[in-house]
Each structure stands twice: as C-alpha cells, then as structure tokens.
Image (cartoon, rainbow, N blue to C red; front, side, top):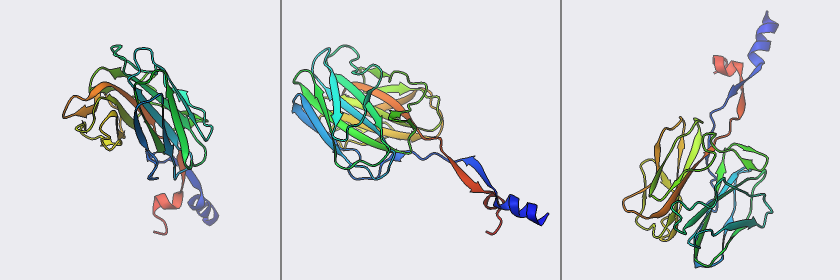
Length: 246
C-alpha cells in the first residue's frame, strides 16, 4: 500500500493549461510605418519569444483592384487571409492581411510590402505569443473563414473559440483622434494617417462584439479578425493537486 500511495502521489497527470495569448514583449514586436505615396513600405520586426504568430496589415489607397505582395529577409512563408485585399464599397482603399508562424525568434527581420499603384501605403507587423499554429500557418477562430469588413469605423465579430486575440484594423485617412472601442488596446500609437490597429484578449466566445474606433469617424474601412490561443497542456503532479507537501 505504501508503494502504491507513493506511486500515485508521484504520478504526473495531464491537465489543460490556461492558454495565455499576448503581444510579444519585445519593444520591436509591433512596428508600424506610414510612407505616404509609395509603391513599397517596410517595417523591422524583432521578437523575444520563440514560436510566435506574425500578423501583417497593409493599407493603401491605390485604387479599385490594387493588390499587395509581401516578403521578408527571414524568408518566411506568408499567407494572405481569405478575401485580401478588402475594399468594401469599392472605394479604392485597400486593406490586406497576411500571416505566418515561426519556430524560433526573429531579429531585425525586414518585412516589405509592395503594391500596385502609387497612393499612400502603411504597414504594421504584430508578433503574438501563445497563439495556435500548424507549421507556418496561423490558426484563426473557426467562425471566421473570411474576416468581416465594412465601410465603417466599427464591425461586429462573432467567435466560436473561447480564447482568442481579437483585432480591428482601420484603413484610415487620419487616426490621430481615434479611440478604440471599450476594452480594446491601441497598437499603433495614433500615427496620424493611414492605419489603425487595436486588440483585445477574450476568454469566452463572442456574439456580435463591436470592434473598431469611436470618438470621430476615421476609417475608410474596418477589417476584424481573431487569432486562437494555443491549446497546450501542462503536466501537473498529483501531489500538487492534493496539496501534499505544501
């Protein structure tokens, strides 16, 4: 009996860990650059944590039908989200979303977007730690096959996964006075022109959650999306669960 008790107390059981999804803590994990009238724009990204998901948003006013391409010095495999570039209302303002997942860390990775046309272009890259991925593919919320977009400052989002990081991307004429809706954190530092980005981490599914900006109309269009948190498991000693030795 003593042997059996010792065995049980030392045995490791697997229990789901609480997924923690967050912006990578590196100071250069969410760089932004607005270049004005140009066919290319670039940012330099560095990460502290290995295994991050990288989301890149490119906005332009290159005219109806304008397209974007993306490349980086790390040679990452980039995937354009379904529907990119988004231009609800066919106004000629275009927003593209790209993603990749990396196995290690990134150091001074230069990410360059190229567009057709010469109207204004802005870019932001965001590194997310604790995200769900498969190889180089980022796993988005299963309810969002194509990210919702609208010719508005706010778009509603509905999710099926409990633990997500939800984003709102704004193709902006001027974001200097924009305030993210309640509960969201601004990631762009109000650059003044071209691009707004705000996020929120949730721990429950969402139904018609407003995502975007308030205070003043600023967005030519808003695109929203949600990245899943990783569903990793952690080994927890049974003795810890029973409070033995504490």
